[in-house]
Length: 307
Image (tube, rainbow, N blue to C red; front, side, top):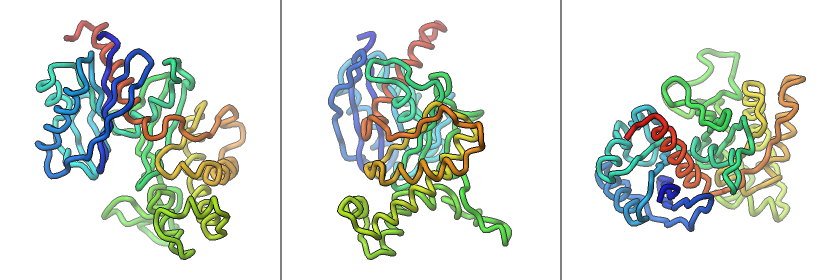
């Protein structure tokens, strides 16, 4: 059981639970997320984790801003976890080590390691392009979280602003106008598609069929993403930039323009070793990364003599 870990990826519509034994991730169990209130969601998580069987530790990925040091959720979208001490509640009710982190951060950790558990990128930046835009950063094989655990909200970097007026963006709500999330998310792609008479969720398929409007929408979205990627390369000079999330099923229709645009905005001499590619683990990245994170933290606690 020492190398048996459980990963949980909590989304607004579904929860994925999977066991990682050694380097083998078993088939995830998929549940519909209970979103009525925090207590019922916690009950659901405890039950699902318990049904996965005995384990050394569990990692839980949530669509939230997490104070990693305490495991408390500071802010959350689509799930009722704001201000919930999720880590401590899970530890108390499950009786095993538990860690909680942002879902895109967990996905980034998964992408930094291969199927055999070997580190493939010392410095990695991940963008998750779905309804919104998330991000994760791995430096030296470890997650980078910043001073409070909230680092890597890459979707809220500004890639375009109207400099003729101030303030440059409406500070009343997020995503801010001009942010990567407002301009390069799946929501933004649907808006671009509507301009060409396409229904939401059909743009990628239409582009594959050669629809000129769909191709133009993906090209523009990719170029907007490319500006965000260039910002990350200029900041971190990473080995690898990976793009995941639902929109990345567009593959090179999205990544081709993104690479071209990123190259235009990266400072000469920076990012000379950086590769930009599609994420490998797809929908399993979050659950895999959560399990890997649980293993890393359990090892650190054992070395420190923490029970």
